[in-house]
Image 1 (tube, helix red, strand yellow):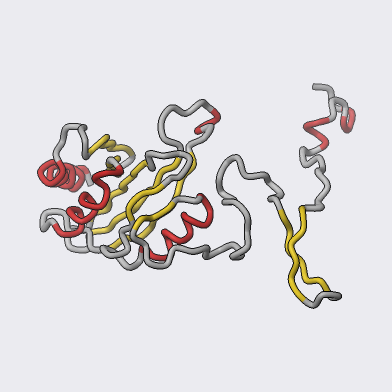
Image 2 (cartoon, helix red, strand yellow; image 1 turned 90 degrees about the vertical axis):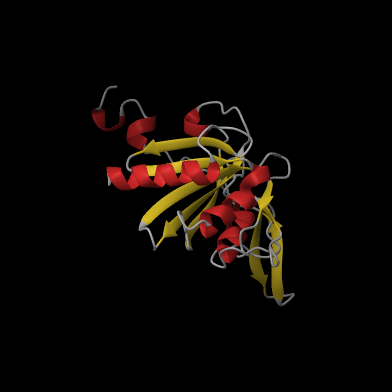
Length: 204
């Protein structure tokens, strides 16, 4: 495993460069995996190089997801809030790579789409758009995939309310689906043994 990672890291160094700069922001090797962080401006070109360079040849995209780094690990986070993480697989060389790119604008997070490189990215990018509000520039069919088309907001953002903004129900009188403000009453979900000092005769 160590030799394979050495070979992959060397191939990445030749294809992308080893020193952090305008293209490559970081290379982290941890727990038998390599993660590269790429600048948003160089994301599309870097992904094409990862697919097409014979020494790398990542033919398959096996996962793509969005991330919200607000309050990361319950600590203040300095830097862009939203990121996209991609997992690539090279069948030819039998190795994997994780690629991370941060969207530079927190108010309108956007990165390039990689659907033209890997068609498998299509629904993954739609999911990241739906749940995190990340725009994938160049995606030909970027629309919601898990929530309803009339859904308001992006439910995986850390500032999204737990109960949402609106609820949907079928109205028998109007014979159609209607949206209305959430009517769920807030309730205590902390177990009694935790929130009550003397529950069951226990003293804390």
